[in-house]
Image 1 (cartoon, rainbow, N blue to C red):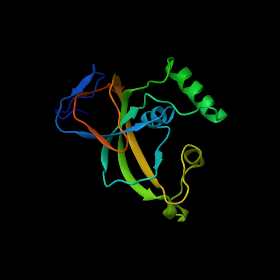
Image 2 (cartoon, rainbow, N blue to C red):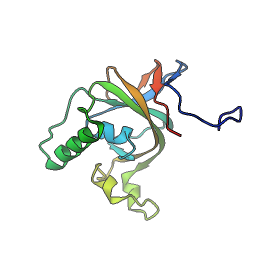
Image 3 (tube, helix red, strand yellow):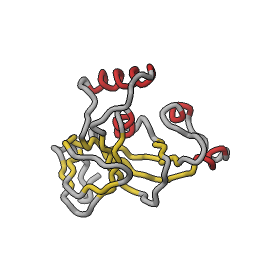
Image 4 (cartoon, one colour):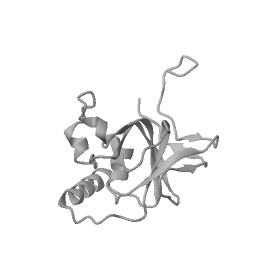
Length: 163
């Protein structure tokens, strides 16, 4: 329901006007698309962050060695779903970063991680698990990425959600 009490309807693209910089992370494919689509809900890093909230997902121009058969299958499956090659060198989505947990703490039963998330990340000791939620599709656009967290301060066009 809209703020004026009317029902939400499918709308054309909505523009988020430039307000303030949004933290962003550059990921290799296919992990970038998996995160942007909400399939990969835990991103593992060798470093943590204090940031919580919106996080832009940027697909790296560079690709990892896809010699691992599972990665080839994941990439081909995603390309079949989207009917196009996976984007590279582009901002492709926005998620919320809800929590960051040291992987050493994940042996605790309160942190039950689904098996499919384990195979998509590196949960070895002394790493950090970033819990992602609320993926939002955007109209992809070319953008230079950077290592670690960086900030994007331009406009982002979110795709309208179906009602």
